[in-house]
Image 1 (cartoon, rainbow, N blue to C red):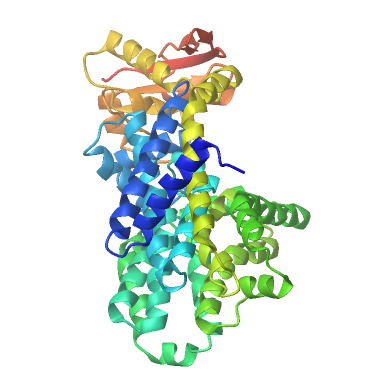
Image 2 (cartoon, rainbow, N blue to C red):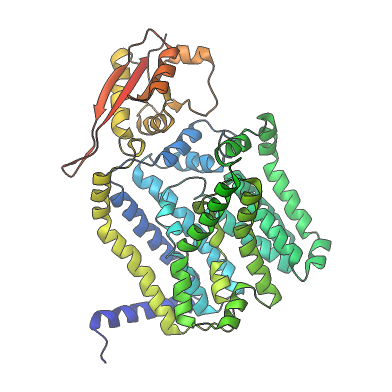
Length: 504
């Protein structure tokens, strides 16, 4: 049967792509070009698909943190805020630049995965493994929302890469980089303790653990990590470990049944995220029970170490959450899959042909192309369904707040309080680049009196209104209705209360 011309052309193009990725002289440049195109396509998708809404509150929250650079924050450690501060010191605060930053996180992680797989996979498996991760929504759809989970993608991958190298080679340089990267993980999100504990467990069950532990490598890793974390640890102690108290308040002290259901949901949701790569590998290789067992828990020492380094950080949260009566979310598994290609493909019984590589590459190219084509429809659908006002109307709200502010004073707006999501959105879009007051280091009362304050609330939020009026009982609140229109489609209206407390 003759292959239709479009499929034949795609196969030839994929063949040339594969040739470049398998050629030692060209493969590194080919990978970088491929990842650059990946970033470009998904960034453009994000710009178009989200054009009917504003930045997500998780993203504007990090911008708020970056306006108050610190060694830590009430909810999370500071690494995401540091990155955002550095990025927007160079680029303008705009949706396109923020989505570009967000997509650089998974792209960097994918490049590290490419380097990581070099010692475990042959050329075709290495290409397929990298391509399979681009089918995982955590590396594109969810990654477009930059937050403390997204920033862990390259950090976990780098820590895993240099940890495995340090165990295998006892290299002092790799051990030190592993420790610094591990510190970066903890500065990204405390969830990373499961990565560190998992890697430690993997080293302890490794066949060569005695020689590794007798070497300088693990102690160099620990020392480098503690040195890199020292300032943050001092900050934590000085705040009585406030982020831990927040985590316990939100996610801890749940009934056992709730924790158990949450843990099962974490497992089910996480596996659903990576279901497509697993299905593709199983469909191509058709492994028997013995091969499946070798994929999950290999017989070879080096592959088993990699498998342990994958399973332990992924499964430890389940054990701890159930034991501690805490809830966990499958989205938090986002950075845990850098070793997935090695787990799925490293078994010698799994074979991948050049034709398999070509078709997987075609799929990896087609997916973002299709999503880019349908992105205007995604934006229109979002306009009809409507995200929460904190993610849909804060640009318009910031214009209204600034208009009301400058009616009363020529001085720049410096502080915004009230509802957290609204305040974060307003400070993101306001031209004066004010600071938010919610869950951030508070300026002195004299500074607020001297510079004034704008407070934003949902009109129906009685608690927010009451707190706003307590700041200045003489101030008169203004209520305003905001509707966001997109391509002639009216969004859901929302009524807000704005309280302007002018400088004195």
